[in-house]
Image (tube, rainbow, N blue to C red):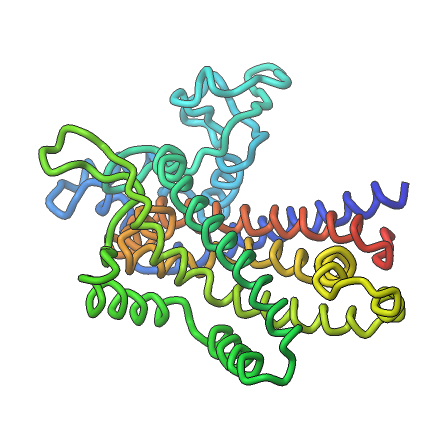
Length: 361
């Protein structure tokens, strides 16, 4: 029972955070000057068309009505009037067949559906379809960066711990301190210039590129993994630096424990003591950091994707900002916030399971 209460409380906090982000983004974009209807139709259009689009988008309603309609559209369970299209709660026919009717009372119904994030002003595609086609690239980049940071960071942290006080250890501490203080956008510019421009003839890396590329004849699509190297390396520098210091500090604390002294007294090899005894008990804070950084990477990925031309969620969001495509920007921000909140929720729950010192109350 305490565990269930703990999970429900964390879930409630997560939902409140998501609601707060959605409300803040809605308020910010409604305070920015500009007419969404004119943006959707283009600058050269007549007033009658603009009025029709404003009515279709619900922009002729009071702000609190627009806010309620947006929450109703974005919620996975929402209320709709299935008979009157001019009603406040209107069930979008484009979602028909994709939703499940949970409850019907007269002309109203509760619908279980995918969140409806409106349509892009520029392409007229649904924001959901644009995000679903690009988010996989962002997740691939984030996971690749985290794998690089985890494997290399743990190995370097072990080497730093077993060579404590040496030049290698001190150099690694300086490197990790610089890595933690290096902003993602500056690191992307620096590494792109160095490895793709200055040393491009030796590394063979491209400054920009996507995971899938079309050949010179435009006939075949091929997988181009080398385009993943620079953005993943850039995005993984900061978590790598954190993991190095966490692994080093935790391993040094473990090596000073009584059971490690006992293992040494029994004549066990130093490598056996590290890999079979000390490291296993030193990785709890590292695992927590890895889980937390996987969520944080969703923020840094925005600038990294745009600088390296990696067509993921961050690239789409900055492009949408440049063209003032409000629904697409709001959809991207909400998606990132939801992913961030869900990962943090899972981290909190898993940490409470792994560490018995965390009380589920």
